[in-house]
Image 1: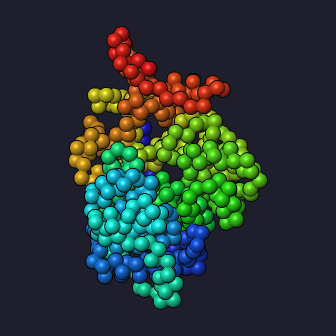
Image 2: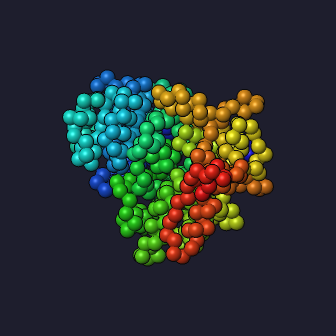
Length: 451
């Protein structure tokens, strides 16, 4: 299944922010609980930080790691570094010590920026043994100086295939995988956001962390296109709803469990959420009943994204326009080619069940230092096009909407038949006395494997 779109030329995100600063210099770009920056101040601060990084011999192609909670300083450093062509590695603040040290060893940063939360769990000496470690809080007093003494912005020439950031997947358990994303991939996310309604009037409330691609695919379109981003350091239902009402929030990106908690929040209906134009969801299965409840109780559109941090295929479900398809994850987005393959890598008709693979302009460069994983995740079509394997089992209906059936690794093969645990789980979960359930396969002499 494939969709097409008209292409525009590549524009680095820093260049787009500079353009926004010329159009709306006094508009608020970033807000957190303690501070805020206008677009003019943001560009000046980006220039000052960029000059400071250069003075400390951190330059284009080097890696700068950040491990902290959301803040204006975090976002500012991220933008300033990437404007210089420095590769940012945002690391999960919830990672175990072993995982964090593994990620630092993998990406080999020139420096690590941390906040107080990180240093509570990781002694500074432990981190400094791997690379120079600095406190993100040191940027706070500098903000006022930059406002009074602007520093000329200096952006490195950026090519589309230059590396923008390294996003770590499975960073809290297992072996972390560094997903290498390019500037072209991030610019494609901005284009997607623009197509989905991000503009200078957007006010985006973000409560998911800046190390997550879920957050970044919403953050970069907002700041690049001249909108306002409100950053929460930690999600709380009451605080989220209060901020949304106070600031006239128009957009947000949440994961399903956050939507679930908000729908269960006792005072939800007492907040004025009439300013919302669009709400987004990704990263986990999104139950149709939950989508329906959000549409009934929360003003504005609801859009679900199905895709991977690695990129490749992307499906979009505009739930407010496609209420009869809430059990699906939508149709392939513009410029996405998504197909179904069998266990032998042979392409299947789209309405057959099999592994979902995708190709688009948002494709990762590869896994950092993991050539064996790169071989496993890429699939080449008969005509020579490279696709990314999702590891998900699904099928398209005759209207081109994608149904997710299960994870490939979770499929139980019993007596030669594929059994999808999610099908059994959905039936069991519908029972009033069952809160949650997990179905796994176990060895069987009679069937080979059985639920």
